[in-house]
Structures are given as C-alpha cells and as structure tokens.
Length: 560
Image (cartoon, rainbow, N blue to C red; front, side, top):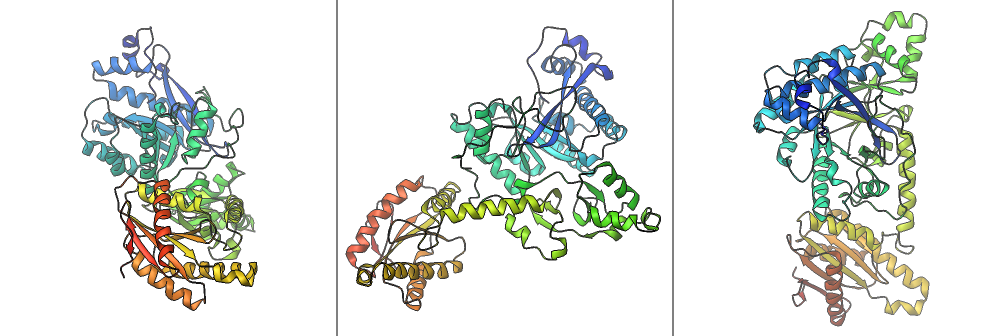
C-alpha cells in the first residue's frame, strides 16, 4: 500500500466508514518497460477522499479494522479497474498482516475480482511489509491460498528494511517491487546499490519480475537502467490518475549511449528482458472462449493454454485458429469443443535463456509463433515475440563483432573483466592466467607469419577451454591472452594447453597463473597488477615457463 503523509482532516472519522465504496478513491499508475516505454501493467493506488492513508490505517488499527480497510481499499481499485477493460495485469497491494489473516477478510477481494470480470491471474497481489507481527508461516500460508485461487503473488516496497529476503525467497513471488526510497540517491548510496544487487540476484534465481518504484527524474531512470531493471513506475512515467492509461503521456528519455548494465549475467540480454504479458486460458477452455479473446483484442498474436498451475502446454496461434473456425461449419464444430484440439504444442523456454536459443527451436513453420517463458517452477510468466528477439540478436552480434580482436577473433579484456568481477563478487575463487606467445622467432617471416602464429595460439586455447566448464579467454595486449578458470584448474589446463599448442604447431608460450581464493576483496585492477609481476618472472625463465602464485607471494613453478 502506498502511504502518504498524514493529512489535516479527521482520518479517524473517515476510518469509521471505510466500508462504504465511496470512501476510497482508487487511482491508477502505469508500470512501464524502461527500455521501450510500453505499459506492461497498472498499479491500483488507494487514496482516501479525506485525509491520507497513514492516518486512516492508524485509525483503523485502533478499532481492529485494519484488515477490512486494507482489503476494502484493494477491492475498490479492482472494481473500478474492471470498467476499463485493462489489457495488462492489475497490481494491488495488501499488508502482510492481512495476507496472514485467516479470518475471512479476503472474501471481499475475491468477490471484487469476480464482479469486475477479472481472471484471478490478471490481478497480482503484492504483499507489503507488516505493520504488526504476523509469523512468516502465516504469511506463506496466506500467499499459498491466494496462489491456489489463481492470483500471482508479488512483494511490495522491498528495500533496506522490513522485508527479509529469506521470506521473499520462500514466497517465490512473481513480481518484486522495490522501495521508492531506493530511487533518487541510488548512484550516491553504496548501501542502496548493494540492496538492489541482492534483490536483483534473488529475482533472477526465482524468475520474479523486478519493478522499480518512485522514478521521478531522468537520473533515476538511468540509474535503474544501468542496474539492469527493466520495469518501473513513478512520477516520470505517470502520476496516479483517475483512469488507467495504456500508453505513457510522453516518450521516455533515450538511454545514455555509454551506459553499460552492471547486471550479474555478462553474456547479454535474456528472454525475460523481452517478456510481454501473456494471455492465458486453461487447457480445458472451449473454442468459443478463445474466439472471444481474439475478437476483443485485434493485436493479440497468440494464447497460451495452461494447466491449473499455469504451466504452458499448448499455444493457440491467431491466424491458424481463425482460419480453422472460419471455414465452413468451423465455428459450429469447435465452439463447444476443447480449443486444445486446434492448438500446437507450446514452445517453452526459461526466462533466463539467451535470445539465440529461441531462434534455434525446431519446426520452421512456427518460426513466428510466440514463445512461452517460464520461471523456475515452470509457470508461464510471459511470452516473447520472434521479431523482438531477431532485433536483439542482430544488435548483440553487431556489438560483439565490434568488440572482437581483429587478429584472434577473441573478445577484449573488458568482457573478461566483467566476468572476473562477477565471479569474485559471488565469493567464488578463480585461477587467472596470462598466456604470452614467443613470437620473436617469427618476425623474420614478416607480419603474416606473426599473425598466423598468434592465431594458432588462440585456436589452441579455444580448443582446450570447453573441457573446463565456466572458463573464458580474452585477447589482452600484444601477444598476451588472458584466461579465467576455476581455482584448481590451472595445472591441468596448462598441461592440456601445451599439448594443444603442439598439435596446432603453434609458437611456444610462457604462462603465469594467479591463484585467487574466494573471499578476498581483490578487484580486476589488483589482478592485472599481480599478473604483470608474474608475467615478468615467467619471461625471465624462458618461453616454456609456467609459474604460479597467490597475490603477494613469490612465483613458483606450476605444479602438475
């Protein structure tokens, strides 16, 4: 629940009449994609006609009617939104105290959903931090009860306090909305950045959608974009208004060209970044129900057919379905029959899959069908459209091509630096190696001979690395290649590399390996300095030398 500062006008008097439908003035704020500006959901924001929510909640608590007030405010938003034919999910917020209450207070919310014509899955119930002291077990039980009715669950106002991340993880929310207080000073507040990174990592692991709140300026917007947040709301996108909107009043500011995301997956965008709201029907739905959805939404490309637990089983593509029911006697044949008979098997991928994986799915006849995106529990959390993915892959390949070294075709050090920093931040150890080719003897053959020798070394390294999971290589400066692998891998990897060099008839190399145990706060700059020290020692020992050391230690021959 969004709580404003208390107002001067008698909140206690208003709280006494909270149950009247005219006591709450539901407002609606758009939740938008921060990259495209498309409205992807609407948040119902309750406001009392007199006073402010903080005072109203306090007054209701004194009369033990807080749960009824909380549910009444959410229900008023649902009922009013039902008259506008929303094409996107509606978000409402309840206190954790209310969700944990098994006294029947939620009956009014269920009635509002039914009366407003919403499918439960289209109403996301966000759980806000409690005011009282409900047990975690009761909150979890209440969330399970809401989910069993078909609602998606969210966590509201997640920030530095109130919401324990362990409880959020157990709730397995579909949506996590950040505390508005994180906006505004994100760049200047290291604590806020740590909180955001922790919540973002939790969302990636659970498949939850992360939503920024309180975006008031272009600076706020850029800060969240830099941290990989793709959904958001706030005054910059649109202040709460009497009617929900399906588009922003003004385009969002374009991203700053030099901004680079600091998200923890450096490989690039994932399918969840391109997720659009999915239109879903139960797999037991009839042809008449599907036809009505397509008729009401001319822009709808497909419908995902799901089980009762929202696991996608089939996809109904618009053109093929409408052709089937428009044929002679088509509607008469299929109107009351299960629409699954006309559907194709769902094309399903996880939210964290790369766009390239979607383009490699089989059956070229369905190359333009939407792809159902699922979270870690197999529940449908949206769809990805092939056109969006084609544009993303084309842009990604272009960027990667620009970043590759023209001689070896390997990525540059910045890509490897990001991977190394993420490994160290995650508390994982690393073995970092510098492979220096001895190209001096090749200079008599001219530039082409040197280039060919360096390429042979690069091919040997890239042939070996697939045997060592999680390893990567980049082209450093001149004749140096940089390898990042697991902490214990260097002895085995070094031996395999030298065998591959002989097979490729590549020049001799000297290798210097830095052992970086987990838990040490070493950054990429410190690693580069230590590698430079080890490299000089390896060169002094000769072109076939292999040395190893931890930070600050004297280098020793690499033990096999």
